[in-house]
Image 1: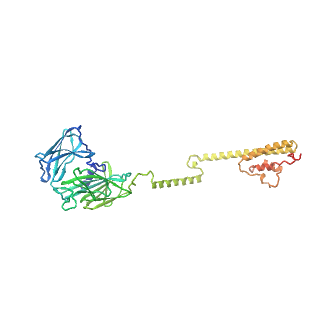
Image 2: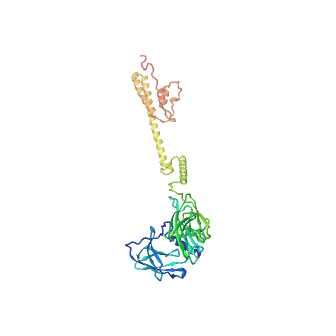
Length: 479
């Protein structure tokens, strides 16, 4: 039964307009009535004294307040109660778009009704109850403190937090918090704790413009009135963080029946002083739930938030992912190198070119090279035979010296040009002869007609050696 009450209170906390973060003072869908609003609503009620069996209070001032989402509530008008404690406010916005409440002051305490809206042509009824007051908080404790976290704002480096505190006054008198001391105590204010460094405090439900807000060492305090029964207060703040882990303390300013922490599912938490409960779902969102019961006055509970995103602008690629990417690229490079060394062709390895195609290209290249070499060898043989023929014609007297020089020079020039452009590595038959021996006609003939088992090779030096140098007589030196 106690757990069901806890969940009901948590759901109520989640639906309060001041939570989780988008809190504005007196947050609610409220705005001022305007001259163009449908002035057809009426609010009527009675002012009674709860300490005297709800006896009506005559001739007391009751004030109507109108709420706006962008400012504090404004006092719209005031009336005096009649002899039966009744009061009426007419000509209100009947569209339902404007929110109102009424309040009165009694024995230094401020007592407020619940918020209401008016419907066109209808009358809203409220009861405003006051109590005898006391400056002692002996009968005041917290029945439930709900702490609701939102996801971290990484760019700004803070975590939005909302708190919903339900006070329970078990006495017959209202506790009024005052700036002065109460019963010898150092402070008579209603106190709320805040973690160190909290910023952007925003007040919501339970706080009003006629309350005084004071900063204290543990947070803040206010001059509020706590009537018998339950009274709720809501506020929110930003909790800055500078690392990936953060300790969150909660100090119980009053004895607290139950503390409940609701954390988004994506935030890692070390429960610390809390007990982990099954997750809860409310308003379409899921939360981790952590609770602690029977928290004594002045006790501090702690929990630790871990694995928070690093505060500040999120880099596109942090060091850790960069190392991972670098390792993957290194492995891929090693794999490609291994495949290349083993297979010899990356195109074949990746299936871009079939292996048969690659082999066909190799055979075609070898065939082309062989054909070119064969043509070169044939041309060299032809020129060597022609050179031998010119030599023989000269020796037989068929060519005179001048014609011999011209013809043999042309053939030798063609041989040199052919040998200069031929890069095929072959062996020379003629070059193996001793350098001090002049080549004979037989050697020249062998150079012209090499054995089929050897590759034909002729170099520029071979041409010079294979061609007899003209004698002094041949060059006409003796003539």
